[in-house]
Amino acid sequence: MYEYLTGFISAVTPAYVVLDVNGVGYLLQTANPYRYHEDATQAVTIYVYQAVRETEINLFGFVDFNEKQLFLKLLNVSGIGPKSALAILAAEDHEGLVNAIESKDVTYLTKFPGIGKKTAQQIVLDLQGKLADLGAVITPVASTGSDNADLADALAALTALGYSANEVKKIDKQLADEPSQTTDQYLSKALRLLTNR
Image (cartoon, rainbow, N blue to C red):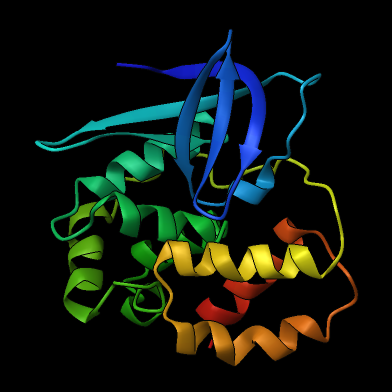
């Protein structure tokens, strides 16, 4: 089992990043790939979780130990798989997530893609009182660039996280009206819009 990998980001896509570690490229699915940027000179450390299934092996990447631990706790909830857990973490409002679980705010939890009322109730049941040991604030890794390609990448990342085309379309115009931003900023804004409806 891997704990973390240190290397250089060689590719950033809507669903994953590729981390080059001594010439080996690790495909890491992450909640928000655009927190990273391609850079052959700046080494980064990404915490990882390896999921082994009958037909596939996947690596999931996290900005720090606490984000990884929150992911693992979400995986322990019946009905939550890796994709749903990443979609929940992508909002980056981990403090809000913990508060929603502690206050039994099922409505907040159902705003994430693939999370219905029953699953939201299960999250509360399984995790309430079990998240106090986690640090809630995640420090994003800076990204670069600020044109409409960044907006397109952010919208593609939303689709990769499981949001429907209709959900993405509803916020597309609001995002396009924003001053030019990085992909990370567009994605963060989009996730706030989608989870605060």
